[in-house]
Image (tube, rainbow, N blue to C red; front, side, top):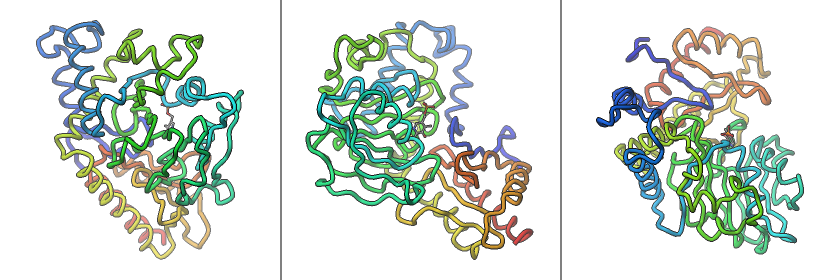
Length: 369
Ligand SMILES: *Cc1c(COP(=O)(O)O)cnc(C)c1O
């Protein structure tokens, strides 16, 4: 397969593909950003140029989400993983257990941090179905006086995704690391949404946190300064040196989303891409099998097993991974904790890449089925 610059189709779960036009722009601006005489990596985070980069990244985020000044957009470090600790630190209120929806490995990580000294109540756990299902929720399943309710919108490892979000009286918080800005959603339903950038939005090193202003003020002022949301709100994400290059690239990615038609257009494309793979799996007569219930299959991370005789065949899966690689289709191995196969098809994965993978899957079945 010949592609521009000899690039592969990269199905990695993260860090993941970036839009080619963004990479080209970064290349063009690399050594002399807009006549500043230097690269973004070299410039002061207090410079006029960086002021504009940060202002653009913030305003395009708000524009894509359709939110106003009741929310703050923060660009933090420590990845999505630091948020697992920062959220309870800042938002937990004594005697008001957190309502948790447990849908897989990443909500597990959030629970692990919560258990270090906060109370929680499990609203739902998918453990008994091995996290292959997500039910829909009613408001009366939630405690209105919880400190907050928490969910992970897209389960990167298990390949499940919330198709709609519950209504809760307590502030709703979502880890959207692996589906942020991949579809339309109503931010006004949420108190906080956070996402490590390295899946849908940019390079690693930046975590985007969209937080309602009043919640940013909830934390105890005795908490370490760097771990208080209000610090970063007050300083506009520049209390210390921010991940400047990552913020710059994330801004370009969001500009690209906007010029490609915004979240609505992107959602349509993402639905089409996912359908190509799920159809290939479902029409394989059982050779490929997706363990996830149809009503909650992820548009971002498509997981499947190779079952030539009704049983998952790991040797054949290993062969599939190495043969795909020879065709320029890389990183289709499932997460080590669940095994099998996984193709991550975030915003930047073009339809052609998904089609190439589907064609490869059909050929692979012909040879081995
Ligand atoms: C990748 C991922 C994380 C972890 O992100 P880091 O930035 O590496 O800390 C958390 N939650 C979800 C849903 C993820 O996909």
